[in-house]
Length: 467
Picture 1 (cartoon, rainbow, N blue to C red):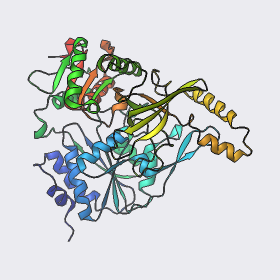
Picture 2 (picture 1 turned 90 degrees about the horizontal axis):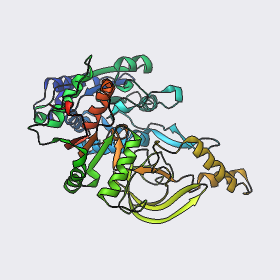
Picture 3 (picture 1 turned 120 degrees about the vertical axis):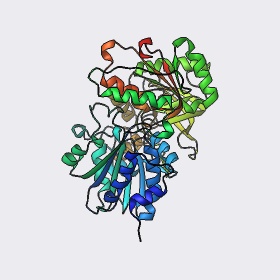
Picture 4 (picture 1 turned 180 degrees about the vertical axis):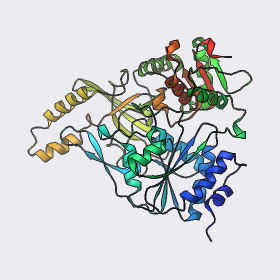
């Protein structure tokens, strides 16, 4: 006899559930028993409310209920976080639902949605607040995810996220967490639940107490910031003069890959990255072995043979192991490097050509006009080949067109940090006028400080923000 879903999940839950968690468990009885197509559940959970614990219990309980859990997230780093708490491999949404295809004529890639062979599966999507539904551009990750999941009507979709976090770039809200929107726009059958009560295990966390206070201010008519750091051992106020000492301490205690600085702009991130390389690590060369880089544009060339990665995604982190060579071609500068993927430790190191021009610019990646010029120059070099198909194949494999676009990864903007967590996080206030302390800034700040797992440093914040 198959147990009730709520009872099965409760057996794997390690604590006495809060009232909110118990409501979620009970809601699973209906969600996991329904057979109608489009069965969807939205779980909205704020920081510190035990969202990861209930999901870990759910993942463990599903096989006993005759269902297969499929864990997905928008980014590789978010998938890694998900894998750790559920003790089951998580994947990026792109890896599971898409296969890349080349668009005609410009060397850029698009996607086709793959055939879905998963049956009686529950697709559990964390960090769903990041999912866009911008159909005007033809790039709706949310719509494509829904289409993929419900190719088989027995599948179910669970969308999980934090409404207080930043919405997708260019959006006011997070469409994937809006029940009415999902019903109206995507014709889904949607249930929802929310986790708002901070769990007993998190009550002594200064990071979460301050995050909760910020989250409660987001809905206020006149939002205010009031940090409380005294008496806590995990949240600190820091001036610019002490930043160097603070960073050295964090790198020594937690390690380079577990420490992050979060800023409000690409310009500030470039400046911080330069400061860290020069003043903390004393790197004098433009690139050095040991440097951490972040991919800033999807690349489909280098990981085709990998079972887990399939392509290098915007936001993936790599470490430079060796520098092979530098060169200049087509008016741009390149380096050939040996790299390893930081978030995929089982992947073997690989050699790749990297574009140096994106390292120091204050824009997210190489602009379209610059890309178009590069494509035209590369194409001209292959025009003497005997057939159009050979020209097309040569362009497709050209190492300069396929060079990785990267930036240094010691500092990220808040949008780039979403889905990730680090043991130590330094959040820089940035230039801030009084009238800029609004709902959007508080959501930015809430998202930034909840990236911190163990220690949070508030850098250069106005003194009036502390009590």
